[in-house]
Image (cartoon, one colour):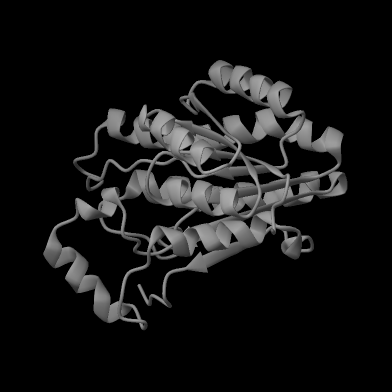
Length: 245
């Protein structure tokens, strides 16, 4: 098993890509700390525990720095270490620039960017003490090419790439790698809300001619979180079927 006895903290772990990642990591032998703002996390943790995996769930808002720090301290006390941080939690509130409200801007920045900062800043000292850690954050392929109506979302996902490179420089001396993943179109509850015609219009620009699934991103997280990627740091791994735009 590629993550045997490793302790992995996964944010936004109750649905979609986060859920697929929790399931994949558990099968690979990891002990899971599952965070989400949804109570569905209790159901997920219960199911995985019944399947023989070690999983704890806590309802945490990554936007609340004090709440994050307290939850990290509790998780570290429970397991004695935190080896992997998957910064997966994210939201969208799309609107064109001229129509976007300050609240829509602030909400997306708070979860997708400040939330990643909060979690990483809380976990990094533990990883430093261990002289080992894997930090993997969710960017997006729109961080590179932009996307209509997503000023707030693209801003956060572009920033994730930059922060990742900084963390790779700052934390590498402590045995910590920092990387991110840039998914393309993935079948999730969030993308299911998109109009059908928009989804169909995207296909000609994806050489593989299809959208990906949460498991495709979970596999990327797994590689970057594993010891197979021990000499990989500061990269953004794009998983989007070769999308041209």
